[in-house]
Image (cartoon, rainbow over all chains, first blue to last red; front, side, top):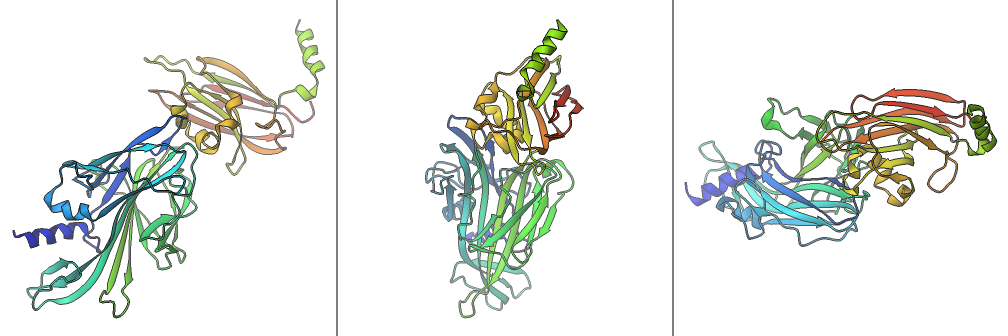
Length: 283
Length: 163
């Protein structure tokens, strides 16, 4: 297999166009912490289709073992922590291991922290080859083979996030930043309990998502059960959707939206995906 | 002697009468290791807004979050609001608690419907959460709850507005 086709396979796995999505997640050891002393949480991140069972790493601080096929993807990833006071903590980083990436976050302030792994918009092209098979290539100037049809130039971008609260929960970090696809709404991500209806809202580029999006929530532990037991919701005209969690546990919320490219921009589609880890407690 | 005791209570007058008297049983559990449970007792409005923490029994603040319902409704907001009602964990048995109907600022909680909440969480053990709807400022009421795991029998006496 040559490098180009390896890269294509890799991106096939990593891009989120319908039908080819791989789950990605970042999971904190704790989401709710109490006490006066400074606390830490450890976080793991992975690319895996088994929810919260890691398969491949996601992110590296330069000290870990990085699969060659994922290096470019990690290089493009921005790791950010928004602190309870709304400022950013640049010190947090994940180290790559064989099956997951891991890092420690020290919680020096009271309030809610948002931990994000962000891939900004990257150009690519998908097409049908002359022999009828599906193909894709990456970069703004990506070449399309001779005789290809159904050529679509697009960008993909993603956010992989979670939230942690030390003592009192607050909302500075959970406000939409205005960048890519984001989860907000009246529910607090660190105040979720079984049987209570909660309301979330999706924002795209800082504005409530007007066009309906499908949201899927899957409880962790899919490797140990036969069905994924998806909870599905559709957003309304304000990007809002309601959820009642039937069981306690960590849930992976996933959604994506496609925004048509502006005529003349050279891009037909812009894809934005979102993966948020939420912890739900029993009553 | 009983009469004298009664006289003393009556003499103290309605103003000193507690609004609620509760007997909380912490079950004796034959487990090893046994750690005494952390316990919270608090008041919420019918729409689940935290109103007042009546008692918190704990040892280390790291584990206060394990009283999850109390923690989300009152505990995590402001420790100064419950510092005055905290105490050490208690041994198995029945404990008598009284509440004078006042909040952390010393103001009388307005008459109306509330929920009285009981939560217990034990290290290397389980957790239990129970609640009872009560009316403050109305007739006298008596309730009995039966815990299943970490709480035993809970008797609640809400004293009427006119004693």
